[in-house]
Image 1 (cartoon, rainbow, N blue to C red):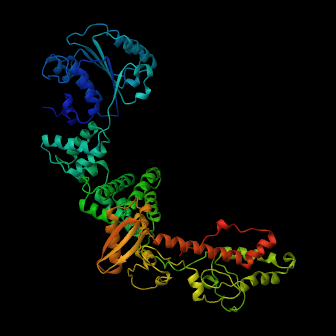
Image 2 (cartoon, one colour; image 1 turned 90 degrees about the horizontal axis):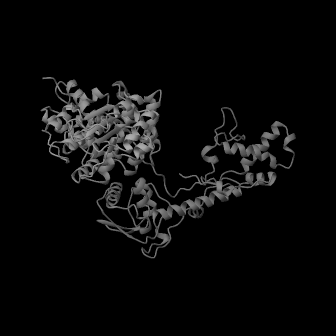
Image 3 (spheres, rainbow, N blue to C red; image 1 turned 60 degrees about the vertical axis):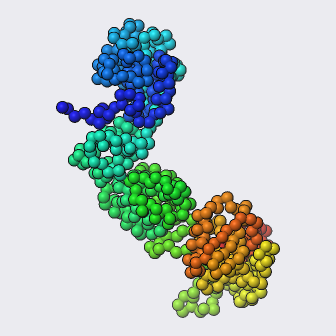
Length: 623
């Protein structure tokens, strides 16, 4: 007996055997059961979703010897003839090969004649959008005044090409693409009936490759059975489709998550050696990130069959939810660059490097990522300092001789312009004198300290000056904290959670993303050996959930090396790290502004050239 391909062998013969398309089947079944029959039906959708199959089943419903119903018997002569494709009253037409108006007129000339044996004469026109405009005009007349014994079933993949006059005379049903999961489940059912062993990961891969088409899925399954010698294995399917196994991109994803640029490049090079399609690599990375996001936000979600459950859960715990969302979005945006590039491997590497470069609070190198947050009490006005960046004298040059500060372009520009402030005409000055005039302002305007505050001579900042640059933590009526209890700058000492110094210690936790935002608005109320109580400002609690408490507790315990329970309540918070950092930044900006306006070179520029300092352009350099 000749072999029948799966796509034909498992073609549905009644509505109940169809997979999906419930929205179409419900409307047809109700119309048939209540005898509300239309003369023209239009079925639209992409390839292989069941347009002609629905039309043939509907033809059986019309012409079944048992009567018009949504459940044709399947055994009468009319049903058998339609199933075997030999019914004289079901005229199937391929409009793609019969586009001429003469063909359409010849076809419709016989519409007026009654059916030979069945109840209705049914015209099934596939790819109807391929008809010419004259053919549509010929068909339109028949659809306007059809005989009672004629039914028209039209199918097309491109309904936009149909004239509006045709569309308005048909009941239109759009068949949707099937989901990969639904396709893979049906393939498992088919292979079970065929008594063929199949791996779930292989079926999942076939379901994705079908792109919503059940017919394509069955055809690919036929091919996979032949390729695997009677079995459907994941490795064989990946090789057949030219795709990659889900686990092959894990080293890439882990390297990106850890910020390991070298490991990422090595993993991409390994994929290139095996001839991987880099567009599909991006697709697989997106699939992993999608499942990771589901595992983070909806615990207990059914995991994808092709993914390693243990690896997925480990990544879900290691990756911040905001990083997952950022990575997915950037991969979706950059996929076109990879598939359209003349060098897809280089495009993929650049895309992955971009993921790491734009990751919040992330820098990458060949070493593991370590967050290094500098002391919150250090202040910088944004002006480069001579003590930090002064150039060293060349060999044989007198160290006391004036030199140009080569490491600061801004300083060079100001020095070049400062000659205009001299009383004499600088334009007629000899080069030697001009050089001396240019460097002299820098000798007089030496930087007083590491904050870039200009003064007459370099001096060490006093304790009073140092404290004036750091915003003190004001007394809070709830927690009863005083300024004297709070140190003005953090010291190089082990982390210790103390209610009074909590805003200073906060930055040393190395938090990032949403967790950083939530914790920065927490006020520390009380600390005991076994627990610590915080109050979260309720105006900033929209993103707060229980998982943040657990992560906050783990970060604190790891930093301090103790086991302490964290309690977070909502309410009106007093002094929080966010408020303290804002006060610090405002103070830094004030110091920077005063330094700029008090700089003699800037004053000379303003006086000589009638210049003005743009206050909004002054920025305090952050450490």
